[in-house]
Image (cartoon, rainbow, N blue to C red; front, side, top):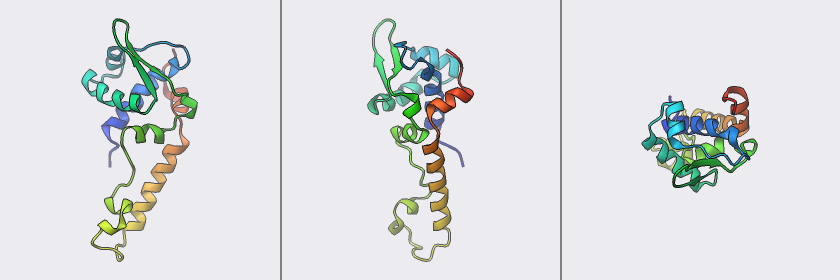
Length: 139
């Protein structure tokens, strides 16, 4: 089982720019792209989700880029994942038990539900600030 690339790259992007929170510093997409070895085009797709979610804001033109506007202390990994359209129901029947043709006799449904709930709880308890403190680069 692998985490979606959008989530992994999105976290790397936010960990990169989070130390600038509150400074007014604008970080260029090309700078992050180079530092994190993620294509500009792929980052643009991820960034648009973060802008829509109110996590970052962009500025255009010469010297343009992005700044984080949501406090990393109040931004959980779960919030980030949700802004990217991710959810952690590993199997469709966890989200909608009626979609399973084996209900009510499926012996694995409780396991899938437990896994989904465990990942969700882990993501809810960890903040972007915590990730930056442990693994981010100083600014």
